[in-house]
Amino acid sequence: MSKKFMYLNRKAPYGTVYALESLEVVLIGAAFEQDVSLAFIGDGVYQLTKGQNTDGIGMKNFSPTYSALGDYDVNKIYVEKESLEERGLTLDDLQHLVWEDEDEDWAEKDSIRLVSRAELADVLDDQDVVLSF
Amino acid sequence: MAMLHTVNKSPFESNSFETCLGLAKSGSTVLLFEDGVYAATAGTSAADAISNANGITFAVLGPDAQARGIDGKLADGIKVVDYDGFVDLVAESDQVQAWL
Amino acid sequence: MPIDVNGKSLEVDEEGYLSNLNEWEPAVAEVMAKAEDLELTDDHWEIINFLREYYEEYQIAPAVRVLTKAVGKKLGKEKGNSKYLYELFPYGPGKQACKYAGLPKPTGCV
View 1 (tube, rainbow over the protein chains, first blue to last red):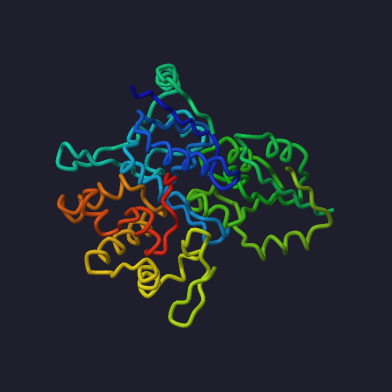
View 2: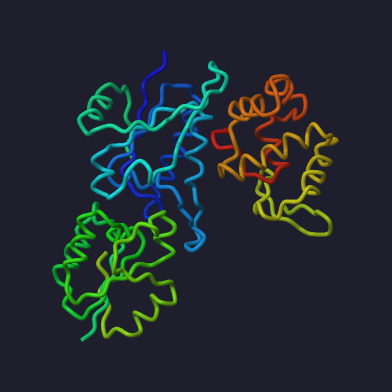
């Protein structure tokens, strides 16, 4: 039986290696066909900002890889509203992540779900396993 | 005496930025780099603190802001420098205080 | 051990994957395929080019399951299945085709 796995992302990209490590674990874990969701809270919301360009810092820009998550059947991506607001950001500042529903002739659907802290608490409560990065 | 303060941690993750602002005197410069650049994002309490800090010059390291996709969202009055500009700031200062 | 391509010596890792993605050229795939007694046809190239485009866009080499699905969508169901892809690349479409395309080993390939 499949379990509910939640990857909880709390760190900004590039400053530490947590964000990249989390993304790699998600991609590897996707092979096990569990019910996977991702949550971005605190500085973790910075992982999803659009327009990242790492040419000047000599590190790999891994932000395009978030767009591949839909291909890996990872299509529940929770972003905490309060965290965005504290950081002067809105959904428009984040990448538009979608997945394609094979059962509906590859119709594109939004992956990101903007949730309040209280709503996210309920989502967390509902998980079998939470992996924190 | 011209002092250069550097902050490389997110203001939401650590109190380095806040501590730095509390101890930086008028005439000094604060350079934000690595995750420290997030303090320069418009619409944050950190950016408000920057606009209220009189007599202090604020700069961000451009490549770090670009890497994080926030170069278009910097608060007003913040100077953007490149690596050479970072070096110049260090050379111009009598003392460098790194808030880790 | 490096491989020789058009008179140039290119670094590869212990499993034969190109160390530097930017050094890839079509001849790299030809040299690698020859070493594994495989003759590259247009059908092989279609998958190799597809993988390079996928990497360019997403910065990862896709897992086999993802590759299969994506090929199905782009090139049609008759190509987006394991049988077709394994016939082209008997050592595994993920591993072998990615190697020829100069990509790293697919994430999640153990």
